[in-house]
Length: 82
Image (tube, rainbow, N blue to C red; front, side):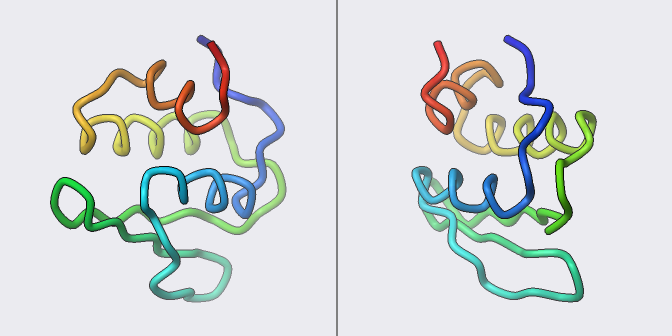
């Protein structure tokens, strides 16, 4: 499954709420999101326009690893893409 090409950092932060992430702090143009589901886990999301593909893929892979799912499964959960 292809990573979305036009996803903004704010949109990703909203999508991550499905998995229990919430903003715990902001430093400059970066958000730190934390979830306590399946143990505490943090991800940093840039609040830029469209995220670079590699940045988005890295964040999705990190989230997928924490929740013991594949990247495709995490994308389906977050974006409703099959």
